[in-house]
Amino acid sequence: MPRVNKTDAKTMLEKHRWQLDKVKQQLETPKGYIRLSGPLEHDNIVNGDGLRAVLWTQGCPNHCRGCQNPETWDYEAGQLVKLDDIKKELATFKGQAGLTFCGGEPFVQAEACKEIADYVRNELGWNVWSFSGFVYEVIKENGGAPWELLKSLDALIDGPFIQEQLDLSLKFRGSRNQRLLHLEHGTGKILSVE
Ligand code: SF4
Image 1 (tube, rainbow, N blue to C red):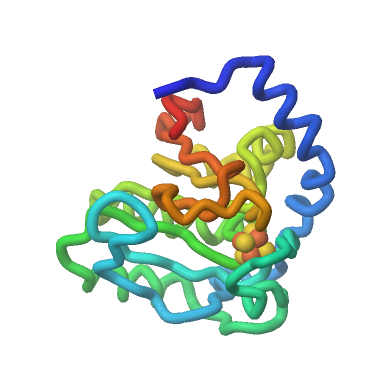
Image 2 (tube, rainbow, N blue to C red):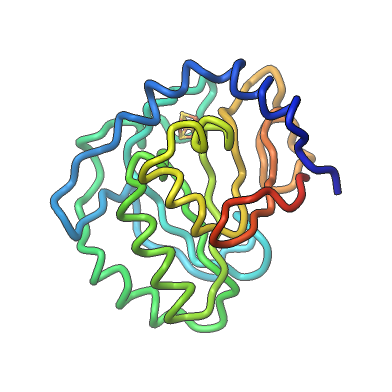
């Protein structure tokens, strides 16, 4: 599988520098809560490898043309849910390989997602994947809570949805610009790219 070299990373950052303003727009929630756009799922097989739990976050600043879930953009819609209640529910799901964060944009609720990511890894032994409309290089450049969340992941499907690059044959992705990045847990280093 190909790796991302330094020149590619620089080009990606320059091309997506406009996203830096958006990744800083972290959604404000009371401590210990996360805003969700729908109920937790389990036994999902389309949002990552193996049987997976899925957490649908609310709020997205990316506004990609052709987005299938525009109702998840609003920062004030959806439901505020206690992180402790989510953990309790996740613990009742048996036989899951991992958890995937979908959206909305999980990285605008980075602190809350990281708490859940660390819980499922440490307490349930699951791997953790996330989708993001932000590219990896922007999350890294921004640093802070979004980069801390990324370091807690095993895989990231990154980049905005681009309607002109729609490709239904891609695994877990909607458009050809999006990448499936396998990451080294703890460092965020890219191990391979699909
Ligand atoms: S990042 Fe995802 S949820 Fe947000 S607008 Fe783009 S496709 Fe929709």
